[in-house]
Amino acid sequence: MKSIVIYNSQTGFTKKYAEWISEATGCVAVEFKKASKMDLFEYDAIVFGSWCKAGHIQNVKWFKKIMPELAESGKKLFVYYVGASPAESPEVLVTKDINFTRAQQEIVKLFYCPGGINYDNMGFGSKLAMKMLIQGMKAKKNPTEDELRIIRTLSQNYDITDKKYVEEIIAEIK
Image (tube, rainbow, N blue to C red):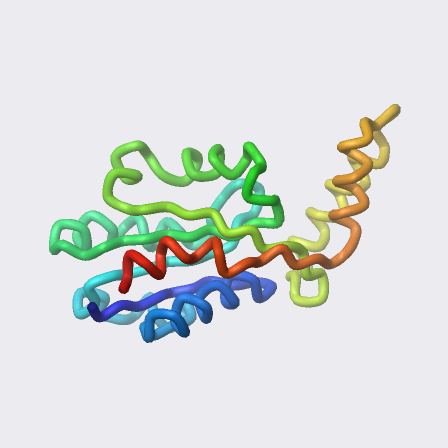
């Protein structure tokens, strides 16, 4: 099966998952900027991976625009989205529903892959948004222990990526 994984990565976590998929399946991994000009109809399986910002999968509109035509031609379609939250977090499911209608979810398989925080590679706007979020949480009177844990976590770099989160995609491609 000829496959491609297209990734849009800001801090490196989405790229890491793309590389793991590519290594395990032998498919080509291509940056979003290059792939958006490619003819995807030559591939049997197309994987799109991107990072989330405030619950929105970045550049997913491009993929959603071409999804119906790719699905009609029998292509297998996958999307993985990467965020800073652990896989068990409730917002993971909310993000899926924010970005894809029920009808769209019928034609594409969706996967969440935990990433982390990498302030060194983060853009200015994202750094500012994170700083404001942390400051807002710190300003809260009588924060819960859970909120204090979140503040500590978000205040530093961390990496919670794991190959297990792409195993199902890899199995589908093989």
